[in-house]
Amino acid sequence: MSGLEWTFDTVAPIYEKMRPGYPDELYRTLFEYAPINADSNVAEIGIGGGQATLPLLETGCRLTAIEYGEQFSRLVRDKFSSYVNFSVITGRFEETELEENSFDLVFSASAFHWIPEKEGYERVYSMLKNGGVFARFANHPYRDKGNPELSREIDKAYRDFYNRFYNKESKAPSEYTEAQARERAEIAEKYGFREVKYALFYRKRTFSATEYTALLGTYSDHIAIEEPIRAAFFARIEEAIDRHGGFITLYDTIDLELARK
Image (cartoon, rainbow, N blue to C red; front, side, top):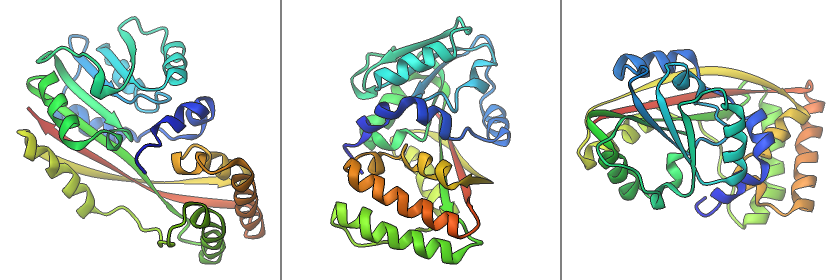
């Protein structure tokens, strides 16, 4: 949902705790495509709680993060204070002055979809040196495949609370597909990028009832639900999980799109 990007900064500490990082295989694929070292100049768009940042910092590169949220900016400045080549600019990416033709890598993890496509890709392209790389990646969780009755109860909770609050029809959740990753990767070609490629990675995560609703509480559209409704909604979900074994498993698909200027 557009217009909800402000919500994340209101829950910065729990976001940093509950949102997952990214698998080692993703970074191996990224670094094979774009070798990064201490001489590299890197920008991260939408650092959030820094879930994607550490493997880049460990290369010794100079890393500039552009982050809309003031709480997140403070959080990551403290989190990565030991890295002298790390800095944060607080502001919207679309409105931030950034030097053209100066970055070896620009990357964005689960954040670039908040930026208008044309403006985002054109700005990234202008920032990159010739031969520089844009890496876009994101995590797409899919609810427990092994417990269909639990999923049905959670779907009913969404109909009773989430869909009623937003006045929208229910839509069955679906797993992120290779076709979607390929389509996302090909966007870059419209803006002059070349050597476009994509890769998919998979994992499972398991949560208790309270852990799962804590995670849901970091999603923009869930944060925006009025508190009394959200509390009843989350209580219903927790009750369902506790009735069906006390845990819920998410099946993550992580997509990585790479393109070169």
